[in-house]
Image 1 (cartoon, rainbow over the protein chains, first blue to last red):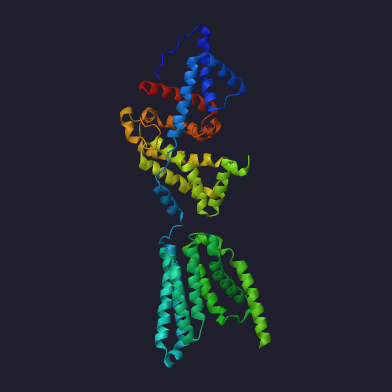
Image 2 (cartoon, each protein chain N blue to C red):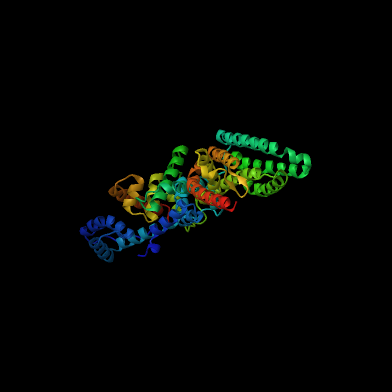
Length: 286
Length: 177
């Protein structure tokens, strides 16, 4: 870089070098027009100083390109990837309201099933009934944990508890209402868990909850062919009430899931049609 | 040119995947642009921790803003605009002045192919906007793209860029490189 500059032969050489200075940069950037490119090439063939300047410029641009591109630390991507996973729902007033709402439903359900199951309890089977209640409560608590505190994997923990609860309760209280309600609560939790990764995954379980809610609305509007509607031994009214409360609780806790819940009307329509068809066939068989 | 050979088409496809919730979409954009964003931030802010924060903030914003990207500019230009903004906000907060030549060795990244650190030292004597300009040009942006990113006219970009390169060459010559 400290080469002696060759002496200019003529005054016109200096003018040419000054004129060509900006053209050298455009040429090095690869954006010089054809005429300019030819002028630069002709000048640098005749002027060693400008030829050296062009080489320096190109070396500088190569150095800048390499200098400006630096691989980040390998662990940085991990931090970014973890930050893009949907965050656990923070504890908010909305989340707490959802907990309260679902607790109210739980108490209502417990009241209903206790009234129906007292006679059976007096006949025996306390241990299984207690196990069912405990499992059911734990299942619901795990779903609450997801709703209010955003604890991960709570819905998956709820599923085996739900199975235990439903089998014990069904056997000893001869009602599938509690199991249905718990299933809906678990589906709501499962939907919330799935929504951490994709709203598409969240749509089916939440649609089930929404569909039963829609059925309750239809029944309330007096659609006679839906009364009474029994789905696999589970009565719709209790389940739909539960579903409505679950859905409202979910929306309170996670209003960003409205998109996933939009499939509920479609699912509700399909389910209602299936229920009507089943009911019609059941009546004929009877 | 086939769509899959066009870098901007590849970036748009990656952004579409990101928008659909596919984590590989953001990963593809990160692989393509993180070295340039990190280089921009490191050379502008001259601190590794701040540069890492800029990269993180940039790609989180890309992730959040994927749905709102209207496609009026190249995806790379959009990512650069986010990164530049992040760098400027940090600079505004820190009010950092150009360091004297002697302290620039602290900031040289070990990966740079400039083992003597002469280029680092020379660039450290320039102000942040000039370093930004040189970096954007070095990363292959056209004068029009740079003009859009920096809010300047294309002629202004050309004039400032040419002056910056001449100054840099003089500084390198002074340091004996």
